[in-house]
Image (cartoon, rainbow, N blue to C red; front, side):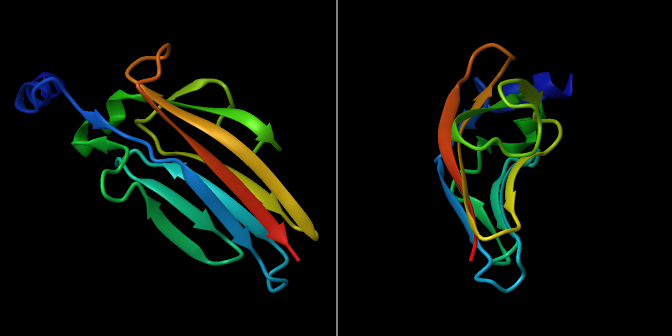
Length: 142
């Protein structure tokens, strides 16, 4: 009932967008841990978090991933590994409800560089993507 009212109030529904981008965390030898994290929040925002570099910033901040954000719980997100190492987080290649925030994280605790390229897709059901973006995660320990 609430969803029907919201859809009626906003016309045909939501506007979705994903910008893609890179999340680079470099511990610079301070903490000994680098962790690049991509979060698709249930509140409609996309966040990039770096543990070693101590940052938490919004990606897609001008549009979020959905407008109006109240419709965010009605969608699904899928992350597919395109290249590199698989990050931790929800099962890759499967659709997950956006009623909960979803995050994928690539961590490293010894000297070197880890990389993951993720295709993030959002759809209204668990079969067809409406929008997609490629996100690169880099975790570097010096």
